[in-house]
Amino acid sequence: MADAKIIDGKALALEVRAQVAQGVAALKESHGVTPGLAVVLVGEDPASSVYVRNKGKQTAAAGMASFEHRLGADTAQADVLSLVEKLNADPKVHGILVQLPLPGQIDADAVIQAIDPAKDVDGFHAINAGRLMIGLPALVPCTPVGCILLARKALGDLTGAHAVVVGRSNIVGKPVAQLLLRENCTVTICHSRTRDLPAVTSQGDILIAAVGRPEMVKGGWIRPGACVIDVGINRIEGEGGKSKLVGDVDFAEAVKVAGSITPVPGGVGPMTIACLLRNTLRAARAIEGLDEE
Ligand code: NDP
Image (cartoon, rainbow, N blue to C red):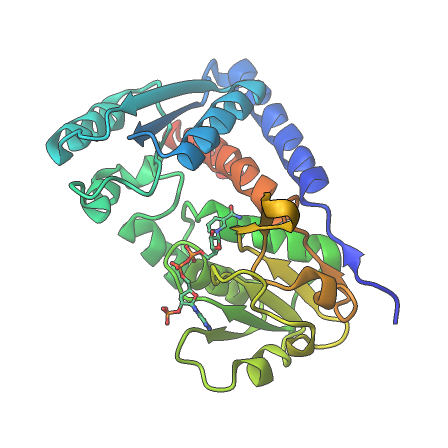
């Protein structure tokens, strides 16, 4: 069998960002509104710092206003909450993102639930999670939206496909499962207590891996011809002691079995920021009382 088709997340992210830039320009032109995204970073986690810098750059490139708030690692929870309150009330800010993980003295859930759900562009607020579940318009977490756009790119209409999701986190597994249901898939969710995981994953026409375990999903776990979306970002030691990024799927094995597959890096990763910008535009339009995109 021929190797799987590689689903190019960088190219699709470029398309999404170009659409967002168009929407931003149109909103400025028609209503004089510039969507604004505020990103809050507490502490100096190096990976988070890189993400925040990239988010700022891409936000500006899409024509939006970018507001960065960098707070010291020892910032008290009350101070983070009061910044969130200020951003909730700021009419120039349409999206608020608090970069996770937060330092230990801060209860991440308390901070997330303090964000105005209308500005919750990460889609982690209970109101948005609930709206997604009951099929109302919602701000939906960015990585799961990226997964759906990638699967659609590879397969077109997803109706009737059996989608198997490995992982049940609130950030990826659960929302991606909800979105797959919305796409009319038959959905199976697996987790650390699933019995005989390979027997379940190998039933999926679509397999989404969001586990956080380097190269766990082997070629034999995959249904021949399946569409494999690898959400994992794991840093491991590669040849010569150099660190490298790998997904949750053993790419070298999977590419021989799957019909299409996302690489790591260059698959789901670039889609996450693109979908964040998309959410910010959607939030701005909704806050301004315009129809949803
Ligand atoms: P979590 O650690 O929150 O969740 C992992 C899930 O995997 C849990 O539901 C857990 O099950 C399940 N799991 C763990 N071990 C096994 C196992 N051996 N067999 C079956 N299931 C298992 O991770 P996230 O959802 O936040 O992230 C998952 C991965 O995606 C990570 O690699 C992360 O870095 C990456 N990620 C990538 C993003 C991107 O932009 N590309 C964005 C967000 C995350 P249980 O619930 O039973 O514990």
